[in-house]
Length: 129
Length: 392
Image (tube, rainbow over all chains, first blue to last red; front, side):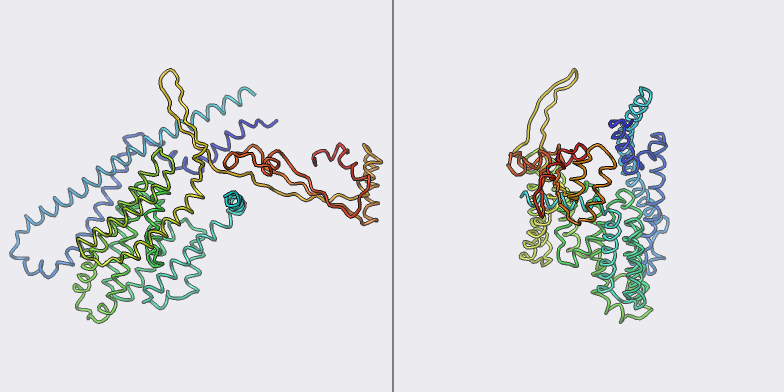
């Protein structure tokens, strides 16, 4: 015979698994440190590519001035300045990613904890039967 | 209001039933409109400015994930820019890539906003975006709104400078890039509008989350006012020639659209809100519960019951052969009765909590309407037949 409460619980859980839960289960498979490290690493790569694109556009924009002053400017200082800008961009973006991924991980764990509680409840319903 | 609520329930019911078809259709329509708008706005590449190609792309978007509409939109615009000049395509591609790499990683679900924002700008309804996003999405969506505004001004810059870009020689590649970057970076209007939209999203989001009555209405009105205020202040500082009248009218339209969104998303009855307080071992709880406005939906089932069948059933009650015989007789006679049972979904709240007589009846169970060509005694037998008890 159908247990109505069990069917409702299973429906809720299936709905969670196919929607929001899918992402949370993926996050939950990682340890906290691993998840944050992977996110920050991805961000560093993204920020590097984005910085290169913006820098390339900047060079194109100032191409004439740059070529005129090429022999006047101190290339080492220029390179240092570029690297500092790159460092600031990557560090800023990395810190932002760290904060966001920490919050996301905590939220996903909370949500998964509830999901696992429901799973236990479902298991106990089956054992009672 | 009750009629509106009934209509909403019907729409929800229809959507629930036909979601499998409605969702791809909506995606198809959105992709079709977006691509068609892009073609009419830019339209430099003749090969993709083709209705058949737009239809194929829109059809592909209808069964692919929503993010593909953004990808197709970006691809179409970059191809148009490429047809205009390689440098324009380069700048466009860089802008899209930077957005993708830095911003969409955090809120990939809101990427649709990036498509909708330029579209609504094109339809002269830009102020709907920040208010609607503030009501429906989270604070991270302000990034998507900002990106959408930048995309709109990028497309505008390309369209505005198309003649100049065409006239320039191939050797002026650097000049072309400078022209486009200048029209983006030094565009004060873009900065002001982006700031106004971002602040509006944040304000609307913060207010609608407050635990005050009519929070959504307050949020949308406050958002519209903040939006106007920031735009006017920006106009005063940078002299960007924002039309006050169009801003006011646009904001009014935005509030009207936001009210429609509220009706479908957050329709609650503050008159029946309850404040309760209780405690357990560890906490005191101060809870405010606001009931949703809902009406019971009526569903009709029409059941045709044959006269002869009923009479036969009455005569041969309890025997299968009697029913079969009655059915056969009824087919010969060809006379029939119609019993309409009207059912309501029970156990649901009602709008306003008033015990309206009509709704009370409907909610209580089922009303039975009986239509017949002739009245005869056999009809009552239908209701007495134990097999047909569920009709009453």
